[in-house]
Figure 1 (cartoon, rainbow, N blue to C red):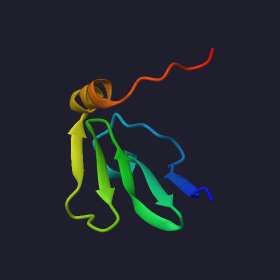
Figure 2 (cartoon, rainbow, N blue to C red):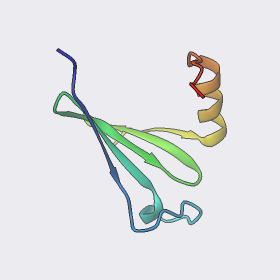
Figure 3 (cartoon, helix red, strand yellow):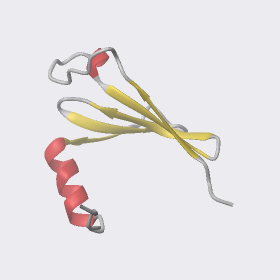
Figure 4 (cartoon, rainbow, N blue to C red):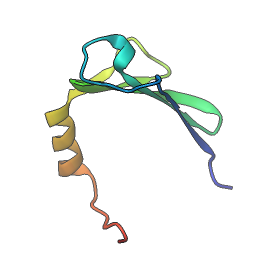
Length: 81
């Protein structure tokens, strides 16, 4: 039986990540098999992962480090055109 996943994005009426206020972060809640795993906060200066079990200690990366992490460790898969 396949696991069910549910991704919920909290979008304000307009997403402008160029301002430096908490209201302008894009928040994506990640639920797998009915249980919340955490929240992904996407903002102008960084991306943060807040685990559901510990939202005090978030994992924060600036965009250059995040891109470096993805390009350095993630397997590459060609997309269909």
